[in-house]
Length: 280
Ligand code: DGL
Image (cartoon, rainbow, N blue to C red; front, side, top):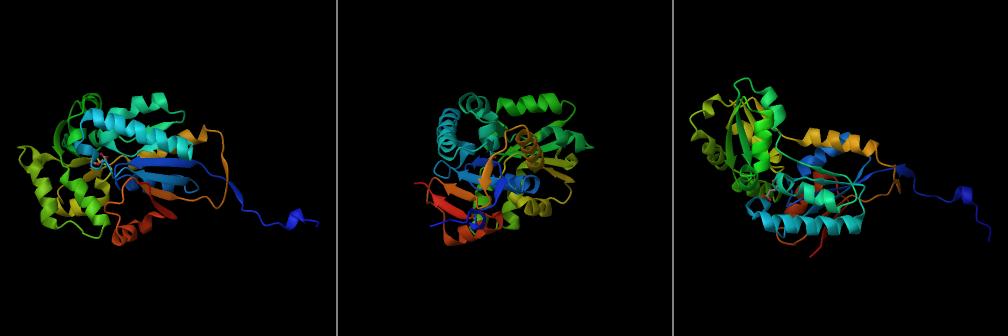
């Protein structure tokens, strides 16, 4: 039999970087949205370690060893060209450890203190994060370096992280629930001067509309999504190109089946994954 090679249909070969995005749950999807805008041709493998969720209340040693273990496994298994730790709670603790053990660039997501300090005209800033990120030395170092002229009012909330996971499962937080979380800021005498709030947990941009409706006096809600996507773009230009077929699969993986209901899967649809996999 003679094969006419010219006429065999092959998938188009495109230069498509493969990015692994990692978080404890759905929060890192707020980062995926920005990466897709900046690098639309990238293939994304998203790993949510919902077995150990929530990361924001784990003790440092557990968070460090779990993140190193699961991200190293995913790196070996999926061979991405770049990894994004789309979690402030993990990034503010584990980045140097991950960079020492992984052979690809690792981009972290850390509180956007620098742009917030530049945007604030009152120089009184709110920092909304997980309890873990709030108490990190790394966060204090960012404040000392980039916002020495500002008063920074910190609030740690694990409940808001939960609200975002519930929203993905179709249960939107009520106005009262959001107001209750923001009332933790009210206890500070200078809250009325706050004009800028840093959303220092990747889950929180997914309820930005609800937050701004509940606190209309806040002018700027600042997150790290765009800066992270720009960093990813610049690192990718210095990496060798990776040819892959145009049929590359965008996957989302969960380490536990807990909470992965049909409604939850429907909530994931706008994020453009071709496959949902439960690893456990
Ligand atoms: N989205 C993560 C962060 O940015 C973790 C939230 C959690 O699991 O507590 O901190």
